[in-house]
Length: 116
Image (tube, rainbow, N blue to C red; front, side, top):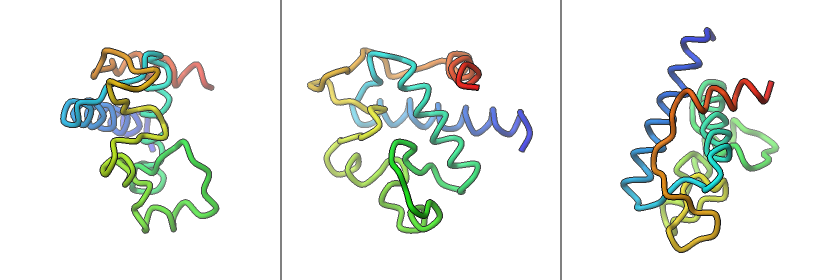
């Protein structure tokens, strides 16, 4: 996996998140670093597992979870009830909702770099 490939995955997940937020009328967290970390986790899982498995849960067997598809983003609770465990997609009536449906790729990369 090259840096360029990693950046492409990150950009693809960023674009997905922005489009999905607009489509569902949800917003990103009022703390942008939460959004950046979740998008980075989704991109990493997409690279490693082939699917954007929810990065905010613990799994005994990630490959089995990917095959079951329940926690692949957007997960079933998000699709059915607009409930995002990761706080990536937040309904306007919920705590920690921000006013943004976009985030810069540069900011996500900064947060990723700061995580080591």
